[in-house]
Image (tube, rainbow, N blue to C red; front, side):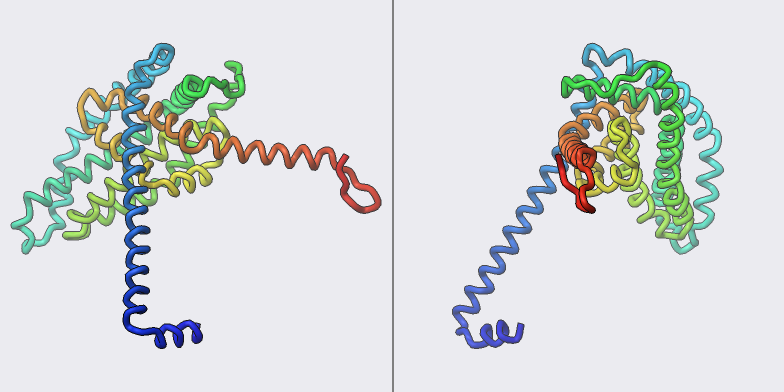
Length: 309
């Protein structure tokens, strides 16, 4: 480093300007690449969401869409009744924490409080619907993947499917354990004056978008028995894709009628994301692992050394 710095100080002013100009150009080029990559990922997240709407209309998938919609109608109706009957008390409780000197912001803070409560109720809705519809959503993801790739997953009998239900519910429990502490923390922060009515609603929406992406991408990942933590890490690598997709799903849950069909749409879109973004990666990893295991299986020990046949 000392030699490099001494050389730098010896060069003339013109060479220094050229050097700094080159650095600036490289920096701008790198920044431009990052911006372009981010735009491409955001566009991809939007395209997967649109693809979900296209896929639910395809012949052969409609019957797997109807049952989740019926479950949504019942569950959403119950939560809507609870929301209407309890929202007044919740809002009064939150607004009681607002100090007098912020009274002039009461209208904005009231809207932010309502938004936070809505997001909380939809988190409850998503969690409950995830547990109830998990087996059906997993089956829908399997059928969508077959339609997109032309390849069958491992065939399962009805008995095998029923035996696999506890594992699917266990996967939903993993998602709940991951998300619940964070939701509770955001909910408690919502009672902090000013912070709870400004920053927390935005943070809650972003986290909700992330959780929606995890919720629905999990079905195709789980069909291939990919561990939850591995899936979460892979989604984080392409967070612009996943958060854009999850954010669009989250927004649609607030739209009447649309929110009744959004779950199968999200499952289809997330499966399309799995096929295009992750399937090849994990399939190659699985093949490499299988090849290694076969090599070890055909190896035997001779004179304390491992040799292959």
